[in-house]
Length: 408
Image (cartoon, rainbow, N blue to C red; front, side):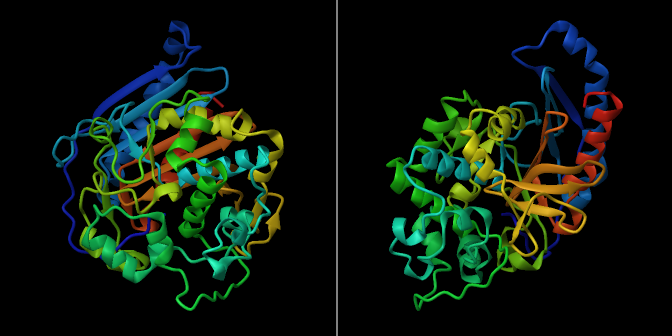
């Protein structure tokens, strides 16, 4: 999710930092907030420094961060400015971001809840649920979710990219997305390995609908949003209602990476009002970083699913070869589960994480089991892959600050 484009000229918005911060938690107290003030100031400095240092390279003007360590108040810090786009405002704790492929964890968790209710099994083959896709009939649901299906991703298809760039407000159906890469002769050639595929998650969305009788939006509401009391987590298959859409910060697509070659007409544009129907269950949720904190706690260690299904969620395959691995190592630094991933991060070491991207947004979450910590950070651009410093730069500084202030 979130590749980029050719390199026209880009006018960087000048930035004057306007900082906003908030401490919030059901269990917070005046003493806890007062004691956290030096840490908050240091984290705010990390974010301000990141925006100042990398605003030209990454074309960013907004960053938001939420940090939660069990038993302590959740800390939310945001740094940003008014952008050149109409109706935008300084970024703050209630500002919304497109979370990109972090949506995949919701999709995988829906599948696993349906399995727990004996409505499907992740060993089921695609032919059982979606017989219309005969070329892929032997692919299992597990293979869809852990990216070992061999099914290509529609968003890298040149014809699809041309249509998308010509009209970024078009409402796509799931069937249209899948059709972009479905083999015209009805026969598919599969090679063993690990291949990132948004198509696999759109197929998973259709399976959720068949097995549950619910739309993807209604399934999210029933299984997670309502029972987990998630606030500021929103999904619409095309366009969000205006009161919610107005809270989404402006986002900018600013990369000349070759795999988005045909999206060149979108370079440098504010993407906040583009349709998210191109992403749907593969990347269509918007949220605040602080709203994602209880979700990732519930996902990794709470009530989002039964224990048996959590084991399945966290069973990894190598992102090199697609074969099962027990965990990441120096030789296998990246592993993928069912909509979640484990990687070795600079300064941090092995961590459960995912960086989701759409055209104009990046959201990175990290879960550190030993510290029982959840860190979620978001920013409002998609730069070239080699210029992306969210995980390698900002995450490193935030982690070091948390360690320095003994928050971890």
